[in-house]
Length: 311
Image 1 (tube, one colour):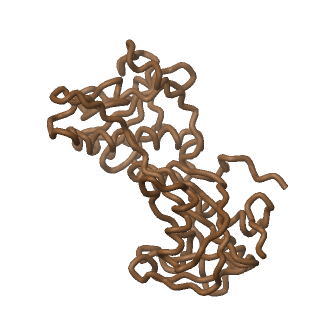
Image 2 (cartoon, rainbow, N blue to C red):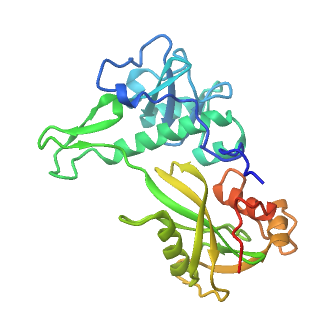
């Protein structure tokens, strides 16, 4: 059986129509004042929406004095797309204007208020602006850095170092053993919610070994085979969730209390009830916009491409 098409239509931030033009950023670039320019405006309180979209035409985009920073992202339908970080005073104006809405990025992904293929572009804008906000000084010599290549880079004039935006890779895994899967609860989770285990990929580590290390550290389980399923940009501030399915070689769970509030094995029927919000104990999964939901649904569907044969 073939796996479903990826990106899954419910997976947040995974679809985008943005053409990035990364190789062309050294030449002349479009300007934010171009008549056909599109702007994604991001305020401290959230994303600016107008008429059900975050892609603001020139007539609705913020003026220059309301922008703390503007960067060039690429194009959509041959129109240049910019991301603008707004000053705090601009947030007040947008919040008071009934023609606009301010929506936080997490809510936006689950609310359906913008098209799914906008979310990936918004995530790109948020991740780039967050990186610029945190990299105003050179990590090598400590001197101020300057925006370059339309925002794709920051340059240090003192030591000549070029700094590029980085994405933090995170492994997230559905651990299966016979007819059950392992789910855990973080200390910050809402009541009744269980999810897949996850952790940051470390330097010099393969994806497979990161899955094995994180599962052993958090739940004391040894992992055999690991298979990749799907990925999801996660702009908080700039991660890539790498979804995998893993085979547990052990049954006994040993929880790291510093990492998890609880972890246990769940049958396929239990996970189906959690997804449907009909579990007798009121247990639930993360929402469909999260890659953990996709991993758990793949376990319930028992598709060959996802599940690993157990000895």
